[in-house]
Amino acid sequence: MPHRWISILGCAFLLGALGVPSVGVAQMSTPADRQAIEQIIHDYLIAHPEVVMEALRAGDARAKAQEEAETRDQIVKHQDDLLRDAKSPVGGNPAGDVTIVEFFDYRCPYCKQVEPALETLLKEDPRIRVVYKEFPILGPMSLVASQVSLAALKQSSQKYARLHAALMTTKGEFTQESILKTAESVGLDVAKIKAEMNGRDIEALIKRNYDLADTLKITGTPAFIIGNAMSPGAVDLATFRKMVADARKPG
Image (cartoon, rainbow, N blue to C red):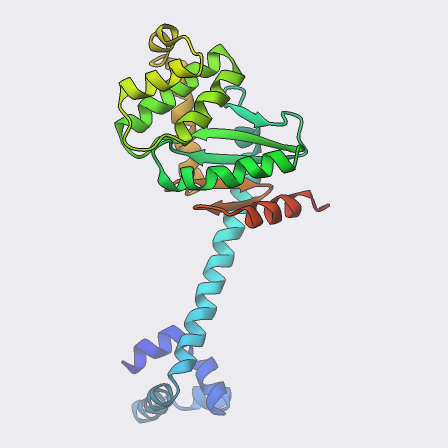
């Protein structure tokens, strides 16, 4: 047990906390010396377990900071894939000064939960652009919904937007029939969708989204990228506003 504590916290930190000079560690080279030091450390940790928690929290914070830095680097590296894929649907203001990239699945309850906040943000801030990354990871009907939506995009971006909004507010389970019925209800040519939804171009776009998500270590939906920051999971309106404001800061 003492060796395990030492490996977690580090001898220098612990001995410093105990007031043992670091020069003394090098001199304590006999087994008896080391055993005595280990016992002191063990006893100290038993008496002060908060030291362990403090060290673990500090380690977690360093790991999180490193992960966030790596994510920022990947976001910068893949700006073209995130922001300028000509095949990806775009909403909001196409010429907006801040872009929100959303990885989503139409069957994801958290995506549906966050949709009203995103729509509110777009209404109150006309300078926001949205790039929708269809990321169907929740089963076959998720894939069908994305295929239908991307086929709808070929008819017009406005019809894609209407279908996107309708699918995001649909309750209950999807079937291919219900998805196509929803498409028809918003004015889409369903026969044309059926002919195009399994096209190689749509398959290639979804695969690019899978690959990009994998690169960015996105494993669930929704995930939002604004500026060089990523927020996985449902985001509330206040968080959206802050992320957009941060993205607008110079530098």
